Image (cartoon, rainbow, N blue to C red; front, side, top):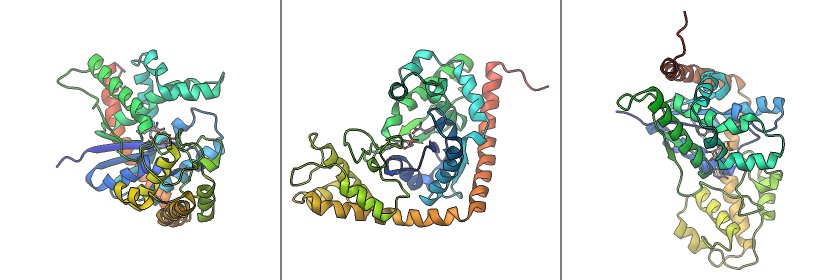
Length: 336
Ligand code: AMP
Ligand code: TRP
């Protein structure tokens, strides 16, 4: 039986937060037994904004350990570091040569990040989506589980694949597979704790705006206690006037594994003083086993290294096969 192939990744810019977990990683874990999975730590993407080299190398391993701590199992999933498989950089160059500049200039994330950086925008930031397309297309992935913010990049990936197939292959024998995004119905856009209208993000300068997967219980309590709310009594989903309320109830719903109607009924007469400790507790309890496993893994560096070495070998094999086909089709002379 054909199992759909999945590829996804997270940037090692700092630690992972609840947005990464609920928007992406949790769904990687849930589906891994029915699929053929490739999950990478996309360190080359993390270099497209200013960063500290020593921290990048460290975070790359930290994020890999968090993948395992969240429940990715090397028995079902190939786990690797993007830069360790050179085909990602090689395919990026080849795809660069067929990607129109204006496709990249249109990307919302590029425009937002470029605005934040002012004068100092590197070419890598513009090229970011082509590298992401290479990540996906190398593995001929059927599905790409991501949060809502990656939808446009997935559409671009499909456009690039289609253009490549049109220019260098034939409709009967396409070389690159067009992937489908897999975006969850709830949790695809977890919002900041300090502003319910902007998304939870690693790049927010305030750590109080997010819950990191490694935050200790007392810090989680403090962040929830201080998080932004509103003066209205009675809590509800889906009121556009109350974005923080919707976000916090959604976190509660997802992490307690209750359905929306049950939560709505439970909280309709509550005030924040009653709800916040419940929410903090649910987060702490949900993260507890992940944090225990993470601590174990950080003490078992040899195991982590072995997983990443095996992952790289397997990923390299698959990626190399696609790269060779693309090189041949594009007219790269064979090695003599
Ligand atoms: P990044 O942190 O940008 O590398 O994102 C890694 C994955 O987490 C991607 O699939 C994103 O779509 C997802 N993600 C990032 N932030 C959020 C958020 N606030 N809510 C839901 N998903 C998110
Ligand atoms: N751009 C993605 C993000 O910031 C990370 C990413 C890089 C990715 N390559 C990928 C996600 C390939 C899915 C598939 O969230």
